Image (tube, rainbow, N blue to C red):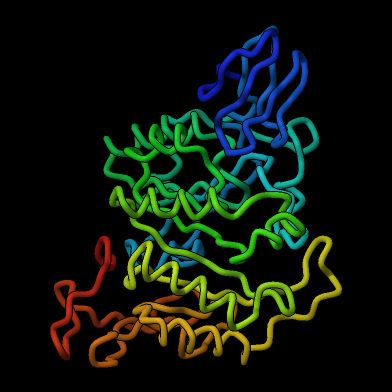
Length: 338
């Protein structure tokens, strides 16, 4: 749906969008980089307010969020468009599409809440593409979700302006941020973007008490150097917290990066080892169903606390928020559904 945008200012007939760090200057009749915002007569409009290109009821573990309402279902939605142009995007058919190129369905916040309840979901996830492009919608959804005791979460590249974060933050319960690499060169070549604003957004969210988990997709010979992995882990430990969950995910060829092989499991295990050496408490390997490092272990005594296979929880052994063996407090938002 078309509607008035927020996060912009006038510039002599043009407008400047302040939603993401690109700060696009948009001439009359033109759209910004993401394709989701248009200058009409000197006023900026969002083209994607509630314009849903994909929706599904997912396990929260699919986001992945492992320490946030484990075992719950989440109603997942997306709009067409993105602030990045990642060469390896697995959802490129909708993330690189623009309004008018793919079919969408208008979903006002009230109808989204109704569907979320109808599908017995505990909350809403803005995912699949980049949710920053419809932040106006996400804020309205978050306000309404709060009154209905539903959570509101982002799966995001983290490329969002401080102005937008300040407005969104109070209505955001959790986020999984994809840190694509720990290199500005990678971000420029592979994503058409910058790393530093992503790191700043992560630090802002964590500092304001938004539950944060971080995913790092490990791509062979692109962002898998041990030194880069170690630098990333050190940043998590020092600038966020050793208890922030980190997901090292296995790459599979997609979109414009079909020549790359899948990530060797040994490379992921090496990343896990580095993360633990750097003091990170909760480290996971993604896209490797059945791997032992997809489980949650107590960082104090090593007791297995949550056993998983894919997105399914097989065992849940946390008692009153603590390890049943040594009593260590485990950072976990919410409880396992009965």
